[in-house]
Image (cartoon, rainbow over all chains, first blue to last red; front, side, top):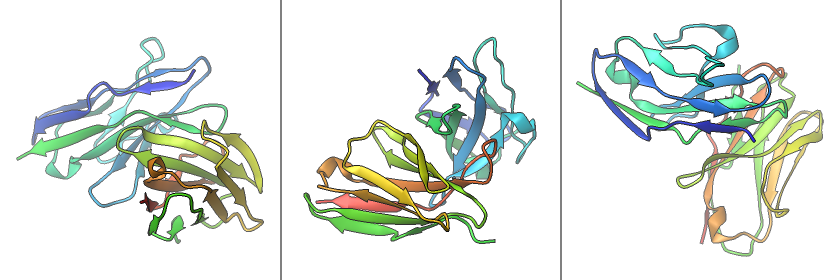
Length: 108
Length: 112
């Protein structure tokens, strides 16, 4: 069965500190992984996907197949990073399986 | 270009009624998916359509159904509404199988 686990429901860090949002997945095939972000009163939007190996808004995420993880990282948090973050796995069935989300709060 | 458009934004219905929600994908996107978002269950997959065919269905009862039209617009229908159907229903569209999905703002359904 496909499963995405985000172990932290809430994460609070100070501005300028490093941020790491954890995501672990369970999938027997070759996974496609995504991070989505939802800012207050805005729609869910794609932040980044592992196949692009890109950095968006200073965030990066590396797929670690050995540890079945896709953690989201940013070296220096900014106040505008406060949002709800969802890790998602796309299976071969063309559906997204979401984690429960992590609410990130950046303190000034 | 216009994003994914969902109508209506808000709905209040009574138990036992039925409801139809609409989604217009980004122009050119042929894959449309629906998700239910609740505080308790998070984001759950309902179904996915491509070229008017349902390709995948999530673990929801048969009261939940959908369809896609030739212009890729999609509708989902929920019959015999229950209080537990109160949720934010999100539609998402994708250009290709390897793209991430673009989500709409959702329709917030309240069943009373």
